[in-house]
Image (tube, rainbow, N blue to C red; front, side, top):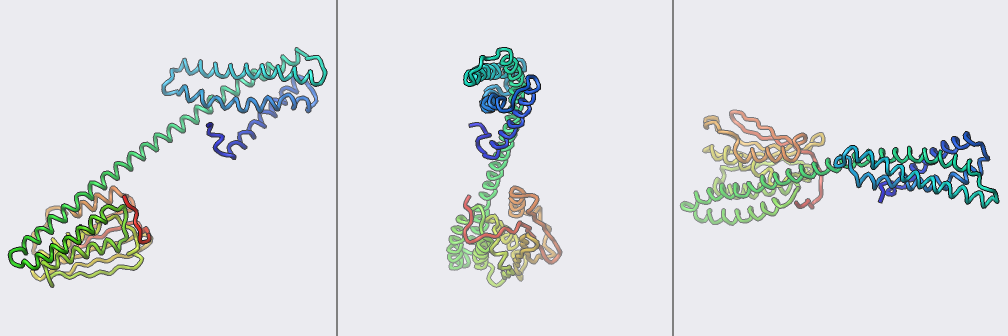
Length: 359
């Protein structure tokens, strides 16, 4: 189907253009041979309606001969041949219609007058069809360009989703490796604690796998997963590990990528609490400010501890995921001080209900 038939407005505009073309042709025919307006319109209007539809056939001719794969010589021949064929058909129809009108009016056909009108319509028909071909080639070029843009965007989205899946796939083995190390350290000295830790770890892994399969989750669910992880670690650290949170109710409803906060909590425990004999407090705060969700994870640090080499897999994973999601609207900042270490996440504050989209 021609694109013009997909919209009523396009069709109305199209016939409006043809009304203007008809006005110009009527004026030219009247100048060449003055006649009453009634007979002139009776002759011209049916021919214009016919050619308005014939004019659209250029769409299929252009599609069958795209400029990208058609040589210039063949393209000129196609345009000229199609325009000539359409104008000759219009001339024959005009001659036939003029004879019919003469017979209906019981008049002998004026051959000279008919030939004059037919010649004018033939020249106009050829020029109009060439313009139609040019216009349709322009439309096809725009359509091809848009299709190419859509393919590029689809390819970019697919690549980004594949990158995100790969980054998320790194997390579960990472969690498991560190947690099993904790269990191993307790198995010999505190078997009951190790057993309890295994149970908590099983609950944690089930939840992490469930959340990791989703595209977005409420921040409240992400925070609950982090608390499950902390419950596992508190078996090992006991009172040395303290958790505090200050989270706005609006922030809890915001949608965030799954397993995004967990690496930051793990990082705070591993490099903050574990390095200090007296342990410490992991603080999580979240608030919505100016349309952005600001999440902060803070932990104490031992000023005498050797400096870290890099920022660890967890932080790097989070940074890469934010870049893949939206580098302009998502950001991760690290603030390192002698007594404290803080990571701040900035995400678009997208509010949602209890249901999250699955990926």
